[in-house]
Length: 256
Image (cartoon, rainbow, N blue to C red; front, side):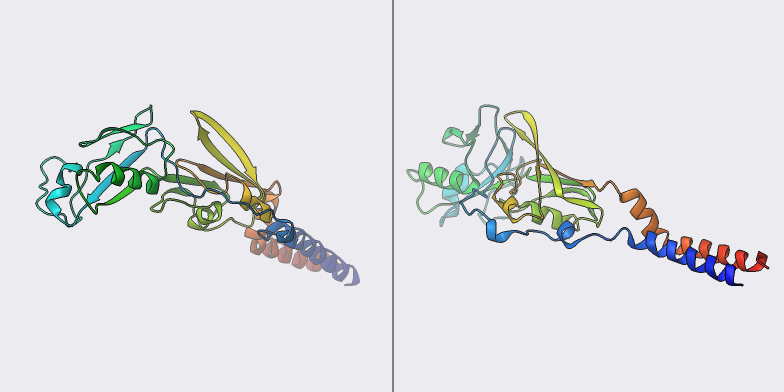
């Protein structure tokens, strides 16, 4: 019986060692550490219009009829009022960074934020209408979050800016197996795919120009190298305990 008791303790000790070997330190999972060493400077958070972007531009005026020439509506839809419920046509930004706007003709839009473009159009149509309100939206502002997150997918962004942490929040945050110190961001710059890695356990990552996402950015969270072993242990702990219990019972029965 002494031998069987010793074997039982040995098996249980081995099981505990395996279960707790996957524990990680605070530094591996806590976001935005080292704040005292951060560098503060102004970063442009606003989305910049690029070629192939799809825009909607709505012009509103105190007198509804005055804005009609500046609002392109879907074919067959009447503009009898300026209630804001009219479905507008989409402007596609050309490769040269311009759009064709009613009355004004060719308008350069590349590199502008939606607010800057709205001010520009308001200024240029001021010779035709007074007190106009111009609203601009980028319809194709989408980002993809893949890898070790709870809800990977592609998300349409309604606002003009979104940070990396907000994007990860949309995806349900990283799983325990995601590499927080090595989050990849893939971005197209001047027609060329680029990538960078951000360490979101370091507060200084907020100062990166990649921290605020752009149209069609892809965020990829790489799994840790120990994921398979850890996942196997954590997800099958019940099975392991059952197997160990069976082994212990067998040892007790066959040991004289």
